[in-house]
Length: 290
Image (cartoon, rainbow, N blue to C red; front, side, top):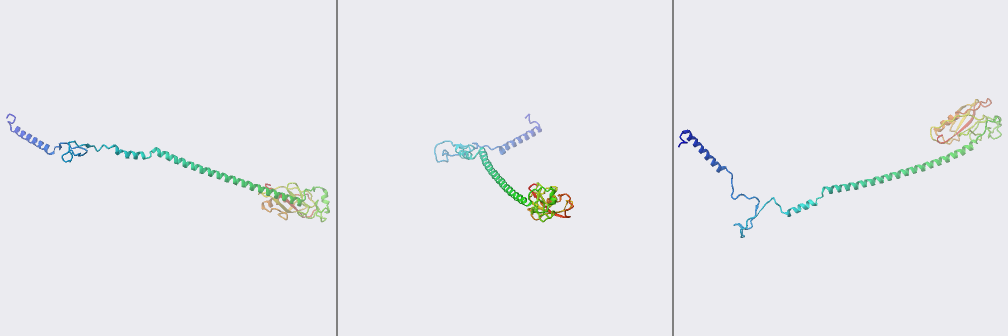
């Protein structure tokens, strides 16, 4: 042949033929499997039409697709979903519960506020009643002290009259005399020789006239009568003062101290005929806030 006239062409033809045979064999051995008839998908139901069934007729088999479900199968699921509360219902329920809780808290707070206001009002009423009772008791005590002071001091007497120094004591001490015939006799609180200056301070010192004095305020808010025993020299100066003697109604230290200062501040006119130490008294009637 003209195409196979050389050795090389004959070798090439052999090799080509061999390769083609190998390829054909491979196609038969490892090629794709093909089923005739093709494999069906789904579930085959035999209604008796096949040769293996007992029924007659040649009705073809019906194939159902598993992906499709009957309408009846979806009803229970739909009922379950319908029976579940929606998120909107949950929100409404939570808001109602919070509203009820807030209302209860507000009612409780209102009750506590009313109870506190009532307790405060009761406390104020009790304080007012106690204050009124204390004021009434203090007023009564002041009146008793005033009556006792008036009875003991015997009112205001004008001792600036020169006749005071010549009193012989026959008037029972009502005008500075001691009742013993001694013009400068010792004075005692409550013996009828008391005199006052109108500012709650009384004195008793026979034959020495009216003194001058200063007023010292107390450091506390107390009330009561304090009697001070004094000794006066001839120059009219108080050289000794002893507060809280007989006749005193309140011995509080905060009253005794200013009472002693008031007594020591008294000053009478000098009298060379008076005793070297003449005994008398000072009475101070302290009031609240004075």
